[in-house]
Length: 494
Image (tube, rainbow, N blue to C red):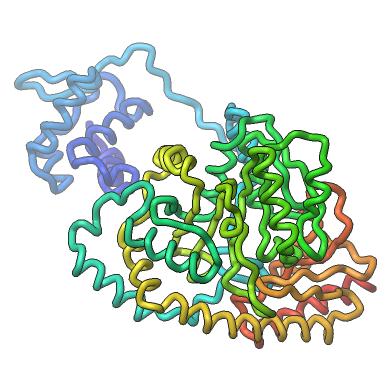
């Protein structure tokens, strides 16, 4: 006899979220099958007539009939004309014992590839979803002209209609590539044409493409020391071996690079605002590096991640614009200059690298969102991008001055600020005996995000301290955060 509790089990299965994707007859079939497998409905037990069960479940009789037919086909029930439906004899059916775990169950071990395990071990690159002072590299988004952006987006949809919803050229829309070429030639002194620009989703993707396409696993690559962790992780994940070259107040030591005994075919650097020191690579060293690349048929990866924000003097022309030999790969991004979720970066490539890099890109994500590209192209072409950059340059310059004053006023016995000529973060060197990692952990518990300078060195660090981002935080927000940091320092000093 079909009991009330069994009927309730079937009703519960109909409403269970795990079964929601299935049609009604499959939900009923799976619920009855589970009751049979669990031994709740034993062999030779009669099942309700399809009409009666349909009435109880408030479904059509056909729905129940379909469920019964499937159970019969699978061998779980027997159907006899005039006698009804019965649970079939299911051979070797054992009810599993329920084990109540007293401790959390361990996850099963999985076997990843060496590359997959390497990516897991280096923990990837994760940005803060909600900015907390003083996370570096995060732009201010609260001042972005969102109504203007939305108006341009609507204009794009009106002008391009359904074409804006289709796949984009893997290299990027011609409109955006043309807008970028005009901008970087004018503002950064680049030598770019639309045909040599590849639109991507981020500068991180550009760095990864360079790592995978220019070198083989086991090859060496010259890098700055200290350096941006995202680039280092991309290189190591590709199986490359970073060869650290020291940085001073004029940028990477090109003289030491040239003297190095290891044959290396690629150098990666951040010449506009070295990450994390903020140093600008001198013109003399830029020219020297270009000649080295030509003589050794090597590639220069120029990561120009935040060059728009230069506060003292005039910015130096980018390395790519000074390079007559086309040995430089220029990487730019709009996630720093505009807002992170725009997800648009780009590379200016030597002509011979356009086809291989574009092809490699198609194996990753295919293309960048068309509507975003076309909207950004309008934003640049109509002069809004330049106006916004000028506005934010003033905002960020003021915030940098504020942060330096706050550090010198409230943390002078602990930190020495090293204000950069531009960028979105300021390095501060520890001048006391406190442990960098302890300060970071204590600050994290209080909602403050500190990046340790020591984590950015490949070899033994010569400096410990913190990289304080300032672009995304108001003067008041920074003041409150500095007060919290001061308390962390004083608590650890005792």
